Image (cartoon, rainbow, N blue to C red; front, top):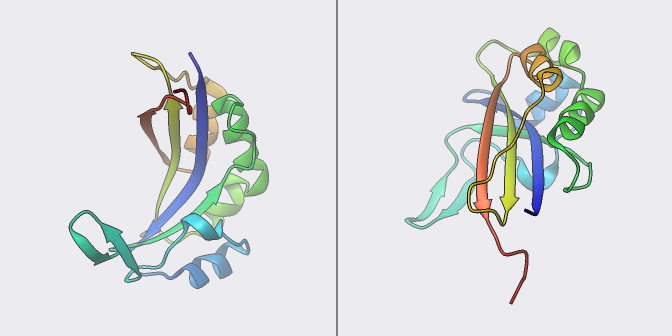
Length: 137
C-alpha cells in the first residue's frame, strides 16, 4: 500500500480574522490553505462564502513520513502550550490528516505520543481518506 499524508493544525473561529489570530499567536498561517470568514469560495452549488475563519499551519514534513513525525513537527513549529495560553475559548482547534492511499481498506495508526500532543493542543483529530492511483495509467 502506498500512502501520503497532508497534516495540519487548524484553528477555526466564527469571530476572529486571520490577522487577529496571527497577532494573538505571533505566528503566520500557511497562506494557501487559510481563509477569512466571509471570503469567497467555489462549491458545486456555485459561489459561496466561508462561514468561519480557518487559520491553518501545514506540516512541512515530506508527505511519506509517518503521522507522528508530522504531528511532532507541528508541535515544534507552534508549541501547544504557546497556543493554549493565548487562544480565545471560542476557537476550535483541529489536527487534520488527509490520507491519500491506493489501498482497498486503508488504516492510519496514531501513536499515543501523538494523541498526547493533540490533547495538549486541546484539539480534535479529523482524518480524511482519499483513494488515488498516484498517477498510474
